[in-house]
Length: 110
Length: 113
Image (tube, rainbow over all chains, first blue to last red; front, side, top):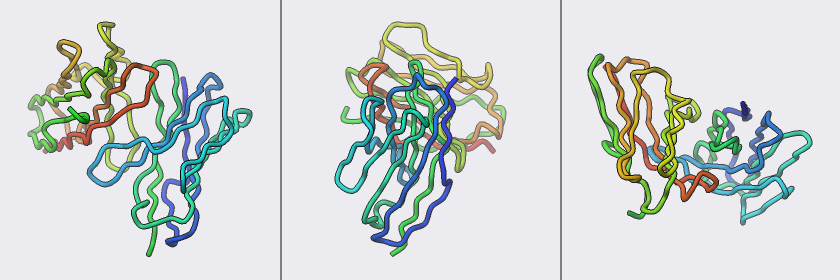
């Protein structure tokens, strides 16, 4: 089956700096990779996604890159703000399901 | 409704008791999923339903866990004879179909004492 690893598990950055979270997956058949943001006491919410026929996608301050050969994808947040503080999960679609990474707790320090 | 609704939001139960957790998906979403999130951990798949097809129960951790979805809408996750290790946040998600993105509910925080 699919296995998704995610690093780092925790990340602290100064407000205004960039944050990068990296994920790897094991099954080359996976073709869709969403990222979710989970704020305290809430369910995860989709923030950006990328399909396997695309190498990079950007939406304002967030971007995702995909390297299919290496089977890794990354989330980039620029000009971080305190409201970016949350737990971020990467995921890979596998079979009829999504397999999630273990999460990264991002803290943006004022 | 506008989003995925879960109830209760919090549940404290005594070890050995049965609990029922409810999920009301977005209207028209044919796929419904249950995940478990233990403290500080990732999302552990439990079960999914797609339309009238037989559910995929491959993630249920033991036979104490079961789920049903009535009329293709509301789903109930039942945990029998709860154990302390069952303490977690149980998240429900729905999607238009199996190939679409999930919309998650806010979860039910279950504490077994």
